[in-house]
Length: 71
Ligand SMILES: [Zn+2]
Image 1 (cartoon, protein in one colour):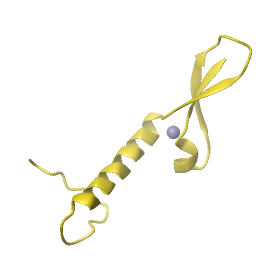
Image 2 (tube, protein in one colour; image 1 turned 90 degrees about the vertical axis):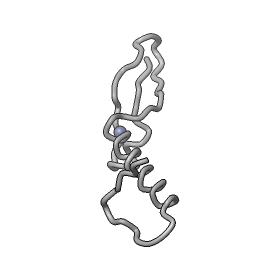
Image 3 (cartoon, helix red, strand yellow; image 1 turned 120 degrees about the vertical axis):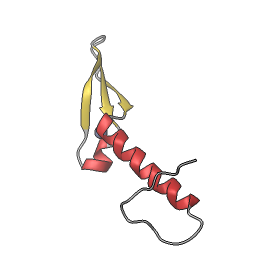
């Protein structure tokens, strides 16, 4: 039996999330790590902030507002 769990959930929310059974085959309990949509959103926004910081040549650390760069 293969269970998909969110590898990021514990970090972001403080508790693990089992997102579902991937396969019922076999009697052994195994886990595969993935990421759930909620954590993905969070990961993306963190990533954006991180990139934004690296790209920021000057000034302010924009607090919570992520400005969209228009190319
Ligand atoms: Zn998660």
